[in-house]
Amino acid sequence: MRTKIIKYVGYSLFFLMGLIFFLVRGFPVQIIVDDLSRMARQKLGMKISMQNIATLFPNGAEATGVRLVKETQEGSPKISIMLDRLSARVSLFGLLAGRRDVSFSAELLEGQVEGRFNLAAEHWDLKTKLEALNLGKLPLWTELIGYELAGKLTGNVDLHVEPKQIKSTRGELALELVQGRFGNGKAYGVNVPWFGLGKTQINLSIKKGKAEIKTFKVSSDDIEASLDGYFLLQQRIKNLSAHCRLRFKPSDEKMKGIRSQIPEELRGMLDSKFNRAEGKDGWYRYSVFGRIFAGKPQFRPLKQ
Image 1 (tube, helix red, strand yellow):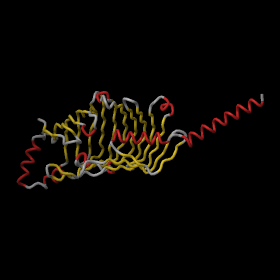
Image 2 (image 1 turned 120 degrees about the horizontal axis):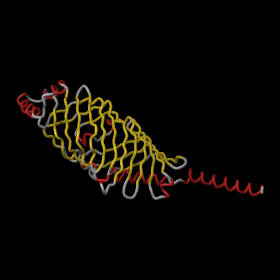
Image 3 (image 1 turned 90 degrees about the vertical axis):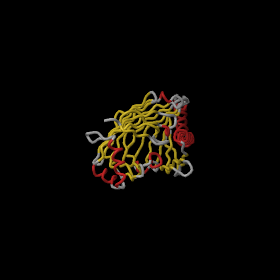
Image 4 (image 1 turned 90 degrees about the horizontal axis):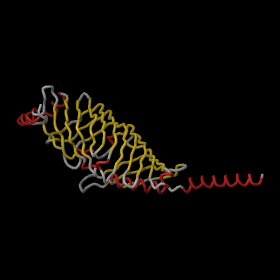
């Protein structure tokens, strides 16, 4: 009896030590690397590279010096994003079931991101929390929207996406931008100064191929603004189109700065365009429609 007990205990310890050795030394880190590379390529159109990668006991990996690079069209700047650290853990039970279920955390843009990504045959799901991401560190705003954008972004994203059935996409976005700034570009040949955005709140509800705006408010000393309507989803994010109504009220100081750049003989033309959108309450109102990124959205004054 004593011999059997020793045998069972010995076999159990041997199995346990073998399992630990496999998880530490033999865990397929390359599976996670390949998944991340494929996701970056398929979902973002970006290549991923890493300086160092190590195993995380018992079912994950951690990489440092991660770089995402997107080659843009000729004449456009290359987009490069650096992640100081990226860790990911894969669900072993998910692998056995044929799924890619990855929890992750990352340090980037002077902030943090953590969440879970699930990749199935016909869809993918993402739940993530953003903490104080510095948007000013993203070198793509001028390329995308023609102006610079800065500020600290915090919030939550919950998405279910079926790439082949975009109308089946659903989810919620709840975001807040603090210390925001927007501007340093040109509109109709006029230099647009920096506008402080103060605190900006954004809440979107996504279903049936639309991202409906629940809340989109900007409040600062430079400008008050709000946006309502919806964005029409597309398989390629660059084709996202707006169907919205915009209302805003810039400060007198900012408007004087813009008008001062315009020759006096042309100010009447500018004023006439603005007057068509200005209400008696001093707010300007426009309808906004068209593709936001791949092309320029159109602005039409709304009747007051």
